[in-house]
Image (cartoon, rainbow, N blue to C red):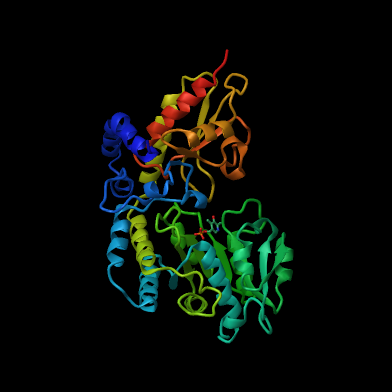
Length: 423
Ligand SMILES: *Cc1c(COP(=O)(O)O)cnc(C)c1O
């Protein structure tokens, strides 16, 4: 029996009344629009055909877990866009203009994800005003500025996206370091928006860079909600800002936004698909995905931060209700400070009474029917939950679930924790 089918059966049997009541109770268009229970459509189910088993996403917008599900409006817009050819440059220009207006910045470009935006945005800074350099980077850097200033605590797993442009990082810690780091080879000052522990604030990062006539870039890939972050950082003065299209915005996973100064966005376009012999040529975004991201931005801007937060809290609380009478289990709703800034559920328990680790719980849910993926911070496996560090921790990301799924997750957690209870 395929797990998609058993999941549907499960939802039908156990969850449907709850789904209906939770959708009515919340009345949020987040539920009505984007988070519908999977429906029968005309197409072939290739997940089934290929034997790839979908799961309930109790993790969040993790890339390897395919991040998010497209709201219905986005799916419909993409299906329409797939039916007719257009000129890719015209579509990139028009979508950029539309997005810049909606997101209150000078200019915008749909890229192949935030990582691609980091690459073509950096390429823009390196090659600005020097079209001949576009072909040469990252190997031929003759006469090009190649130093990217970054706080030591902002070095991260996306460094490579910038290094693709032949740059090298110059690390700073204090404001004094920062002031002294600027040379005639400085090309951009890079900021990782969700970094923890840097000494230099966003505002100071911008003002010192601008004092030296150097553009600054903010990677805010996973940093919506709040919705207003989509303009907060460009309005703060960052010359380039990127967001993932497929995370909180819930557009196609292979899209991203590059927002910012008109001249730099123009330079980024020259380094990007469909132009051949550029660093961005392999980072092509198709017409369906470009339209999909525009539709997702429209959808996301129609949402309301407070209503989203309330809905996510309710989901977490429904899970808490199912677990609270299990001996030694403690629960807490927490909101990570910058990235994934929505309510998550932290569950802890006495490992002497409940003899199973968080990692083992995670594996049991992954192997169960329906398949469930818990947040990777479970079992202390990642620092992303901030406060979850022990082996006896379970972290549930509720924001990418579909309505009613929280009850299925709650039942499974209850079964597994009860089953491991001793004494
Ligand atoms: C997810 C993420 C990226 C990459 O985003 P994609 O849209 O998957 O390319 C870059 N930077 C940060 C901080 C991220 O969280």
